[in-house]
Length: 460
Image (cartoon, rainbow, N blue to C red):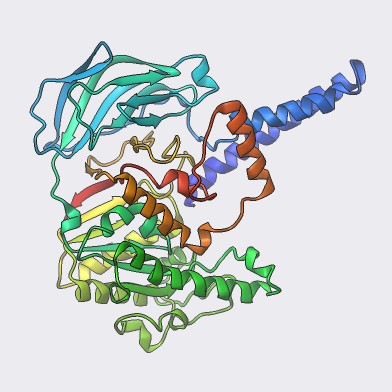
């Protein structure tokens, strides 16, 4: 997490502690002056209500407008609903990415059940209590005459359709920058699995938070080393399920959550926080070619940038896929894109396009909201983002299932849910009507396996 998200989470936890303290004082008064059994009963009911309706990490008001601007070459036209059918009087031929801007207002039920809009056979969900400007993703749908049915909310005000043209970037040579094993699959499995020229470079081993492996009788350092080896293997092996051979996958072997510190002191080595290792060559034995830092194995920023220069020169991509520096708050994700941009300043080969993705958000941990298999509405943007063009290609049911299986190959997404999360899901299923997919227990199986993938387009 970056500084902004840490502050939001800190404020959220502080407010929750204050509310809990106030609630305990009320329960104490009730227990003393009303009945001894009332506080325990209310405590259980209060906990269930919290898990059902107040456990989401939402660090903005659902009444806030999303703030999006679109580039000048975007076609923006008014639309209307007639008897629940969408009508647009514009020629949309050749426009592949379609975004419908509208205002949603939750009903009273929409404060307790997830408000959503049905778009033909698609469904896109929003925050409980929503009351503001939102953006539906109509890409891949037949817009004229599309049935639009709001549930637990209503549509207010005028509708505007934003239509954008893109080439099929998957037909070009693409290089995916993955800060960790699984980032490429989460963001872009659908695209790299149909791209004949795709390559993937993973920057870190992903060795930290290895408590599950300590149950094998390993100490903390040994568990972290094992996890780093496994996730480094995942970064080379899982892409094969999507048709990307090992000779087009590179593991750089730097260490988790150390990239920002490396950026501030470019020549200083930063070893692992947990494994005790400080030589990135320990997980590079299967790389298809020699990298500049193979000489000394030092985990420094200068070495990382030099390695990325070598990868770009080797694969000569036309398109680079990398985390969105303004939208994705993860420290390593922000630093990965920073390193990539520095590398591009030094390369003789210059890619044409940056495609930006977001596997994490500052202020909404449930986005994309709603069940797996549905479309991806635009994420919350409470602070305006740059006016980038969007590219949102569609994934059919077969490719979605393949994507879910690719995520299942990732060791970091295989662990069992803690008891608290299992209970929370059961309560939310019964009281709030939420559903999770059968393909995997990790939350990313719900969030990432969708009928769309979503990228922000920046030309270089």
